Length: 352
Image 1 (spheres, rainbow, N blue to C red):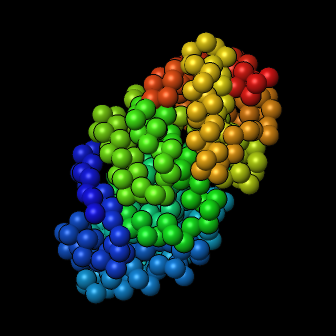
Image 2: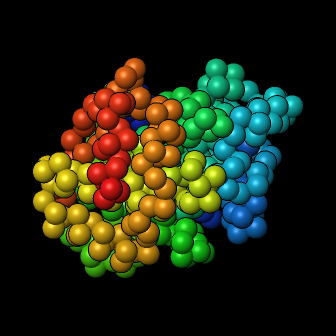
C-alpha cells in the first residue's frame, strides 16, 4: 500500500492498495473528521459490483447514508443529471457538515465533484475510483465538470476532494478496452516529462500496476501543487486532449476518451515531427507503446471536421489555443497556436 499527499488549496491523501473498499468507512471517517451523512454516487455498472461493499463499510463506521445511481457512460455527464443529483441532495437535506462519495470512473468522479462544488456553495467529497483512468488522472487534482452539447467539460469548477481511495483490485473487473483507456493516460505521463517511466511501461502496465498508479499520481500531485488552477504547467496534462476531445465529439461519443487521447497524442506528435521539432523515431516509439496496450493510433476524421469542433475547446483563448507539443518523449512544451492555423496543424498531424 502507498499513500501520496497532495498539497493543494486542500491537502489530502491518495491511498493506493488492495482490499481498500472494505475499509472505506474507516478511511472516510479519518479524512472527514467524524461520521456524518453521506450520499454515495455511482453508476449502474459499478453498483452491482461494489456498492454493497462500500455502503456496508461506511455504515459500520457510523455514517448515515443514501445513494444515487446513474446510467453508465459519457452521455450521463450532462447538466440534466447534475441538476437531478442536486435535487436529490436537497430533498434528502444534506448539509454543509455532510459529504458526497464518488464511486466509479471518470464520469462519476467529475459529475459528483462538480455537484459537491456547487451544492450549498461547496461541500466535501471523497473519490473512490474504480477504473484505471480515474485512478491515475481524473480523481486527483480537483477538476470537476459536466459536458455541454458544444463540448466536453465546458461547465465545471476546481474543487479538491478530501480523500482519494484507490483499490486497484477493482481493475480486475474492467473490460479490456476500458483498462486500455486508462493506459492512454498512463502513457501520457511518461510522454510529458518522464522518459524513464515511458521506457519502463514497455514491461506492461498491468504487471506493475501499483507502481504505475503511484508514479502517475505523484507526477500529477507535483504539477497540481505548482499550478492548481491550470494557468501554466498543469496544461501539459492536456497532451493529446484538444484533438482527443474533438474526436470524441465527432464520433458522438462512440470513441472512448482513452482511445481519443491516444489518437490525439499521435496526431500532435506527428505534427511536431513534420514541423521539425521532434525526432521521427520517437513518434514510432509512442505508436508502438499505445498499440502494445490495445489502443488505436489512426484517426477516422478530417482536419476540417476536427478543427470545427476543437475551436470550441475550453483551452481556447481569443484567437489562440494552447497545444501541448512534444519535442521528444519526456519533453513536452506549451505553445499558443493561432486558431486560423489549427486546421493546417491538425492536417500535418494526420499526415495530410
